[in-house]
Length: 387
Image 1: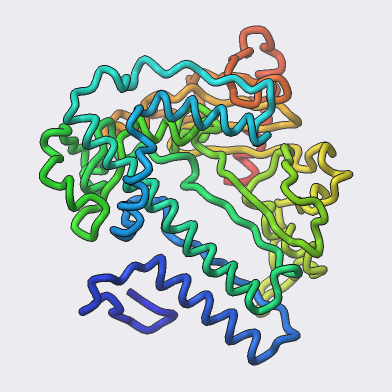
Image 2: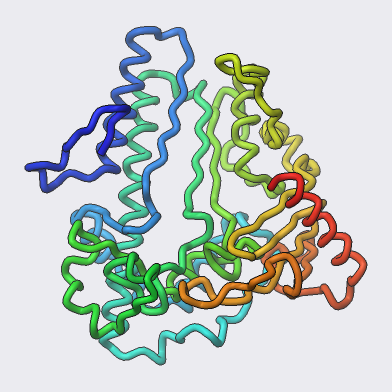
């Protein structure tokens, strides 16, 4: 482990060490130091813990807390339905959103043996514990901002996710994600020797794809599938009491992670630098999201008009409320599946009108061939410009 430029070994002789907590401790120390040394100067923190990227390694305390709640005993299909209902109740997704049927290529919960269910529930408990534990550490950092009396005038941008929910645990999950990348899969029975150690430093644990699919609700597919929102969308929350008067508001404009920096610069009243250390800077491709902050901007048209996506041959393009994406040629949970030789041609494209279909429920490419052709052309232009 390297701290700045210095090798450190904080885990030596410290079996309770967890990097997520250590990073929060360091962020808190930084805030205190900046406030004490120069209380009038602004400061910036990018706190990016590993949760919930594999390996899922929360503390034992958090695993026990989550296990006591029995959140996952009804299985992944039921979990998905509950998540979807909660999202609609909270207004996170529109009332016209629809939930796609459970895919035939994934196991149904009722088809599993009791041993499989027991292992898979353990996997989900550890994953959820990792998420809750990480969220708690982020809360500690935010609490320090409040203790310093700076919460009202601090812009906090909270983004939670791992692209989409990751399917790299394979169909049955794995005690070691490296197995996935080497094409090695284990049955639930073969994984049982790691049951008690799951989520500790004795495993590099990842969960079964059924959970990954459920955790991508309301969307379909998972991480790696850049052609669908299940592989790209993450939850984001913003707080800035002095700059955002509305509390608990929800916004549905389309934005991308590259819009974060322009948003911060506008909020701080700082222009993007033309040069840094004598090196001329390229202009930002992102656009500020600050126009959505006032309640009057709640329904303003999105200022991000176009955004392209691509990973491992999966293409996607957003343009003015429409989205086109390629049908995945192979599932992301099979690392050894042959990849397309030509990733620019020969793939099937799907088309969605997001105003009517925010969860990409209905492919309307057959009814709109000219729109699809235009979207594909825009993708090619964007991919060429940004290669």
